[in-house]
Structures are given as structure tokens and as C-alpha cells.
Length: 152
Image (cartoon, rainbow, N blue to C red; front, side):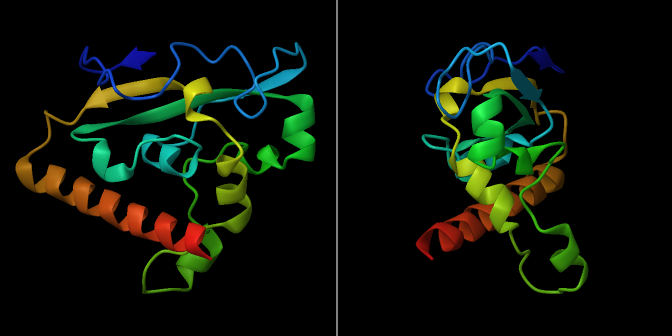
């Protein structure tokens, strides 16, 4: 884990120390892919992931390993290179709440947060109060969007 400000994640977060098994099925198949681009806030879409409003003053990215079968058959490949679960095409056409990409959210929901590691982790302490408030308000919006998606 790369840490910008030598912060330690809260002990009650579910994440693994390293991404060594498939985050979807737990297999240790050598044929696997590693993804390390998805933002920390999106762990809320994963099984057992913390809600965005539980992240406190932290940010970062997640890293997970996925076996070939889950990558192809469970649709986790939708997360390749993803930094967000937002539907970027629909967002460009909308002034309202951001829309989620159904394929990406469904793929993230296949993952167990206990098998996902933190790739990059940082404290937001260096940011001003207004900047931190902005990040937290975004987290609240993400939480509301995910709750709405899973209620469908």
C-alpha cells in the first residue's frame, strides 16, 4: 500500500493487507488480473465494504486480484481501468444526480471487500476544511446513489 501521509487505516475496515486471492471467489489461480484504479469510496458497492460516510477523512484507491473465470464469467472485467462506477457518458448529458454504470456496479458487487486491499491510501488532513467538506458531501451523494441502485 502506498500511503501519502503515513496514515494507518482504521482497524475496523474490512480490507486485506494484500490482494493475493480472487476478490470474487477466493481462488488463488495463477491466471489472474490485478486492478488498482478504483477509488476507495466505491468499496461501498462491494460485499462488506464500508459506506462512503464511514471513510472519515481518508481517500485512496483499491487493489484487487480477479481470477480468469470471475473476470470473464462474473463480469468483473467491467472494472478494468475504472476509477469510478459513474456512467461517464450519461453524466455528460445530465445536470442532475450522477448516474451509475450498471455493469460496473454489478461487477463491484461481485467482490468481497475482505479480499480487496488498499493500493493507495491517504489522509485528507492536509486539505482545508471547505475541501474536506466538499469530499464528504460527494461521499454522501455516492452513498445515496448506491443505496438507490441496490434498492432497484
